Image (cartoon, rainbow, N blue to C red):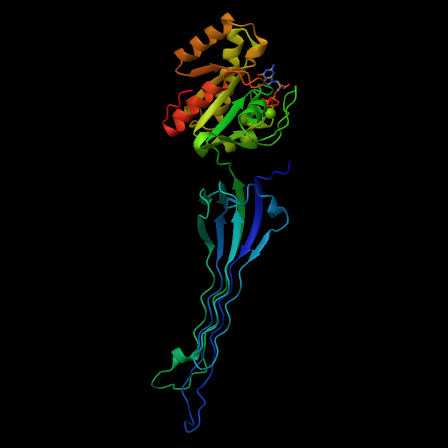
Length: 338
Ligand SMILES: Nc1nc2c(ncn2[C@@H]2O[C@H](COP(=O)(O)OP(=O)(O)OP(=O)(O)O)[C@@H](O)[C@H]2O)c(=O)[nH]1
Ligand SMILES: [Mg+2]
């Protein structure tokens, strides 16, 4: 899968057009006054979010964005045309940063949200503005102001309602493929998922929620171990996290350790992450014997810490109706019976 979540671009706004030096020429008026028009304004550099894009891949092929120059002014007080703006289209969820300081300059979350990154140069005044009582024939006009050139870093942080987290191999991608039409790679080894996958859960009445499946987290992820840290930013904007535990990692104490490990990594990455609404899914329940004591004990322990937990099988779909109902309630304040 082609995925790119960071890109560097250079953009330049248009130079202003220069003002014109010109004098009126008409029959019977031998010495017409100055009539040089103003130069047009240079085009702006605009960044705009569009839902048509979902990655920064287009920036692999185009890194330079230049707005048009303003046209020079002309005689008969005609102003030059303004230069055309250049629009840098990005997927929703993109932040624009200063590449040197990392300072955020823009955060584009909504479809069609836009912002002027660089203003075009103002056009120069034509000589019509420079006539005075002592100089009725000024030969002076202004050049336009130059546009600005600057580099920007684009960083895409996925905008999903729900984020899937857990250790590698916990079954996150399997769950994504069961809940949504996404078809991520699934395999029985850790780090199957290398880049985030997105899917959409469609409920009755056309309600939808987007889900982000990120690579598994391991201890030290927030310091750069494994792959997960690079992708934690993709769950920053989610509202609910589904935390998957693999029951086959049992006993209960081991599973609670798994849970804490992942929570610690989230905390180390950003203190606000663990405070997101979190629902725990005890996965691969089809592999444990029915009514297993561990499951009940685990649910009890998680509940004591304030978490709702559901036993599920991402593979067979067992228990997923309950999860969906809970999500419906959480996001749409709805009780859908049945
Ligand atoms: N029996 C059973 N196997 C499951 C279940 N969920 C996932 N698996 C298996 O567990 C393995 C890992 O599943 P993935 O969905 O790739 O796990 P992941 O969490 O996305 O793993 P990474 O991408 O490496 O982080 C695969 O062999 C799945 O078939 C389940 O509910 N029951
Ligand atoms: Mg995966």
